[in-house]
Image 1 (tube, rainbow, N blue to C red):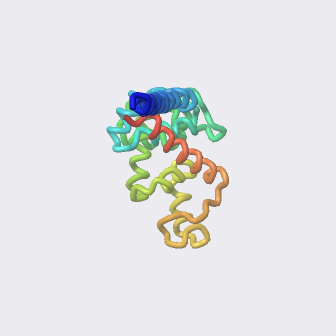
Image 2: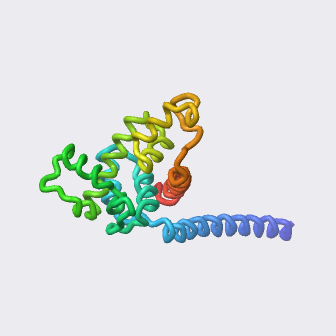
Length: 190
């Protein structure tokens, strides 16, 4: 009888040990993933995301894909900063947000860049009825292009979702941002 109890006890201890190992591995796994998926500027991201009712993990996924968190990034199309704000978008935002003495070099400022990016994402949320795929596609290709695609039966059968995206860059961008968005949610959500 004593031997049977000790075997059961040993199985119980082994099970508890296994559960502890799994929990620690998952926590360390998240720690390791945070190296590949950092969330630099987290305070700014969370502050502006809250201000404009945007998911901060979506903002982080966009920044990761747009600039790899490099505040001095510039694209071949002259988009600047963390969220790669185009000069025309920066000018428009400066007028709408009453940014005094605005000039394009200000787009390298992480605080202003994230603010404008979140403001623009909020506009896209409203324009595309919170459709995540359309919002992300529009962030990359422009809202005018996405609107045209939705009106073209070659790209959208129902006028509400995209069945096909004609820009290869936008197709790839959409997949990457949505993947990274899920990872950021998993890794950083409390």
